[in-house]
Image 1 (cartoon, helix red, strand yellow):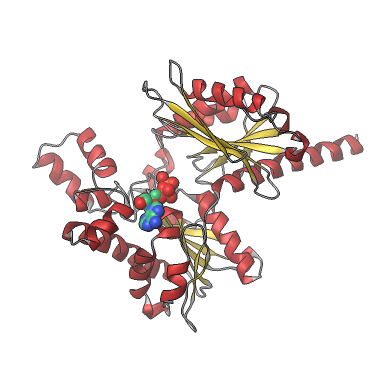
Image 2 (image 1 turned 120 degrees about the horizontal axis):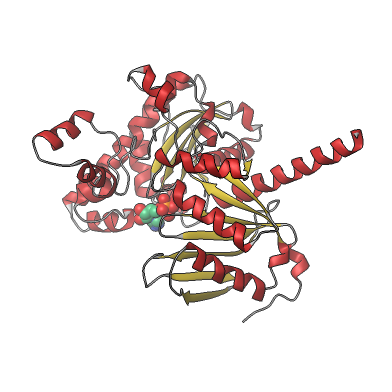
Length: 417
Ligand code: ADP
């Protein structure tokens, strides 16, 4: 096993943890440069084929996990490897991706007992995600008791939305008493690519007006006015908006009554149908994976073609409707696994947006794939960038910024005292 000859190279790195219900993604990142020192994934947790895969120094290490095959087992193995690679002393803090911060959290937040209780009570809005995030937080507190832990909320970037964008056409009491409103997700990704676009435009983010399309297994569009999110397609839960890998996106709410009253569905059946059996998978009856569907379409599978056609039409419709939030538009951003790689999807979306002066250069579109970013707009057309997202870097950077500013505040207090 490798050990690092010069561990000081990696001082002040942030350990980024993203705990899902059956997986933990992690990376050790330098917050200023974005350099990834170590990265990996533990998957199939809570099943006896649970495994952890770690990449470090151009080597890949895979190890089966021991019982109880849970998040703590995965983090224990990660800690063992961090020791073996001489990296533990390089870690200055742990940054956690937390899916739901409700209305309470719009900023990176130092995790205290009170914050943990809030994340727990917000689990009613994100029952699949927040409990898993808490498991990760508790496991890291055990493993790295000496380190500060920071929560970066996926909803935070969208807390700048105005009421007209986040209130549903439902009785207002549901919002006031029960928090029923649009929260939006993928905030960290939309923020990162918007910041990158601002750099490409060579102006401050606060002067940028953008529409960002995050297209992965989950998909969302966000409209950014003067650097702040003013509307987004995901809602109170991650089912609303675009059609996704297995999620339906927008449907007529009346369909749910029809499923229950006429077709005998129970609530759990409806939840499973809308979250796991719909979207690209449901329409194609083949796969939720865009690559598989593109290949099938090219070999004549009509159902795959229909699924992809609806997918692209919905994206174009959202982009066009979100232009109503802006008086100026600097450009459109594609990101996420599909946005960064599928030149077919990008072309289909853009060709439906010629009224907004979008037009794609075929050559540039084909080149911007597999990690290559760039502006794929044809000459004289509106900017349209492919930008690889990097949520881990944002988490590392914001965690580090919070610690630096609290350190500065403490120093100032000490000087005054
Ligand atoms: P997640 O939301 O789980 O992070 P990703 O952002 O990794 O997902 O995106 C996964 C999606 O990206 C899948 O539908 C996958 O098929 C698609 N994708 C990845 N590479 C390509 C490619 N070369 N062409 C088309 N789609 C791709």
